[in-house]
Image (tube, rainbow, N blue to C red; front, side, top):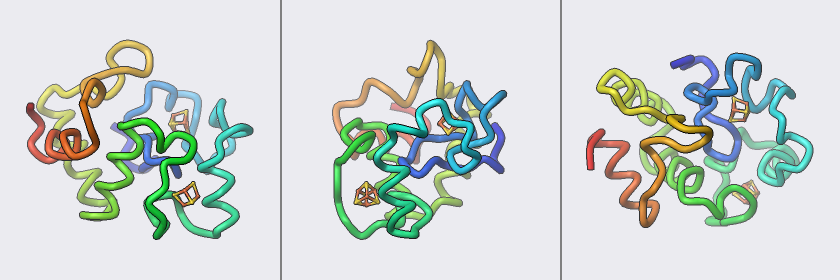
Length: 124
Ligand code: SF4
Ligand code: SF4
């Protein structure tokens, strides 16, 4: 885990992303999706660090997906350092963020609250 890369503006975990060998994170300008990412442009226009710092409960763009939405909600509830602590601990325990392509052990949840519980406990 590259903890220093933190979390992207949409909530995805740059620190664990399989692309992070050649992308230095959301604000580096190296993300392949940067030109169409509405969460990146919207949060930049609002002059906030990311959707996790926004007071709107919105599901635009990547927030329509459970994983970035849940990570964003987790940060709003517990803070970004707590999320990174959990991700780090879970990785040590064998939880894989990108196992096949962009899917891994944080995918395949029914809703954001279930995923938030998994992030905290590291098991289903
Ligand atoms: S590809 Fe996107 S999620 Fe992955 S490290 Fe780059 S900005 Fe982060
Ligand atoms: S949560 Fe929605 S409104 Fe807020 S910065 Fe992100 S995309 Fe924009």
